[in-house]
Image (cartoon, rainbow, N blue to C red; front, top):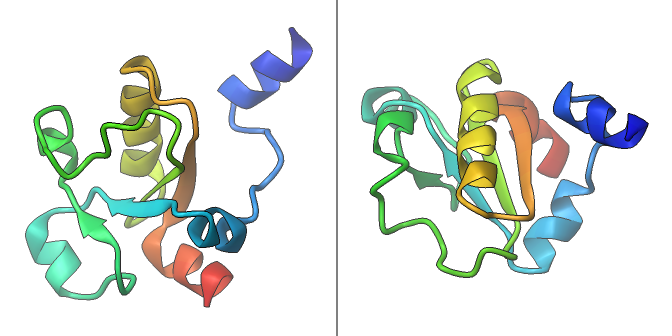
Length: 105
């Protein structure tokens, strides 16, 4: 129960993002199209947070690794929660896109 509480509060161990990507994971950038056009991680999918519920760009496989990112980490945390509520099992909040880019670069 303590581990579940830590995970809910965002204190779970930091995943190996490079490994998740090597295994076929995807990065979903939930910023607006204009923000995304100003800079983004190469190969990431831009699905603005308001469109996340209805976007066909999200994999049908609910076990596929999904790493969310945005400008600061707030919208990506919301995106993670939304995807988890839809049954996706392997969703990680990558935080800001620039920080995530540094971690995987």
